[in-house]
Length: 329
Image 1: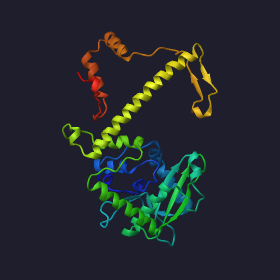
Image 2: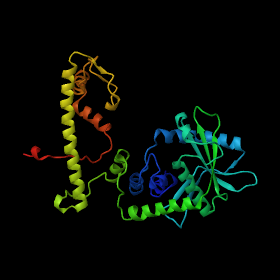
Image 3: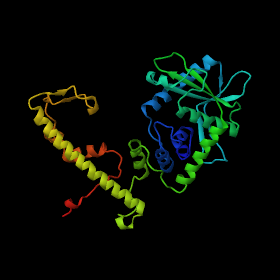
Image 4: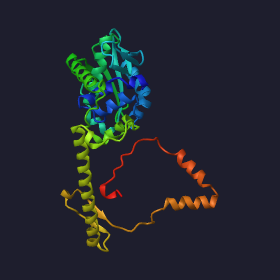
């Protein structure tokens, strides 16, 4: 994805904006657009990217379709929208149509229907409707249909081809959601609320890599921001209480087990299958002592060790540090 593409709404984004993506959220889309940074390939994206030429060749041979190649779409009507078609195809005697290539693992095959239908996961369905609608709008394709060729790894030897007919109502719904997102969030630089924090941590890091303003006094914050700070403080208090309760329970558990290696056969509603308390085969390694011993034996200087640390240091970022009242002196 080019830096320019990263700042627009594409076909893989619209499912997130309407709450249908299993991977992205409105906040992750917002962070990519505002920061201009694309996310690194996941294993699934890497697999699809590397295997796409194979799926393409098989699709062309099996279906007898002439292929024109990938195509990037822009429109002056919606200057925030883009589409990156995997391919444009044409069957004999027909007009050009959009083509998408996908790969899926064996265990994912159950989420897809029979070949020739439009029974595909919603995430891909919205993506194809976006591509088809935008392609028809700018005249890049002529057929109001897109074909989705999916190779199920370890299941079938040829791609399964799905045919998805363009639905103007679905495309209009997606356009409306995308335009509202752009107007309400991107233009005023107002991040959407988090919906899946586990997936959004990296997005927030990209948004706010550096502190650009001085330390704020709590009293100067808006009521909403003060409430967020207090919610965080309460969550920390509850987490510490839970941590202390867990430590107490662990000590009591070890006393109860005594010399026994553990316990099994726990009730299903406990969420646990087995508790093991067995001896370690080896003690824990003190890497600090290892480094000092290595320096002593090899004669590597302290400065050299520090330079190695710096060479392997990750990208600089911001760390949230909390100072509690009892810690102040």
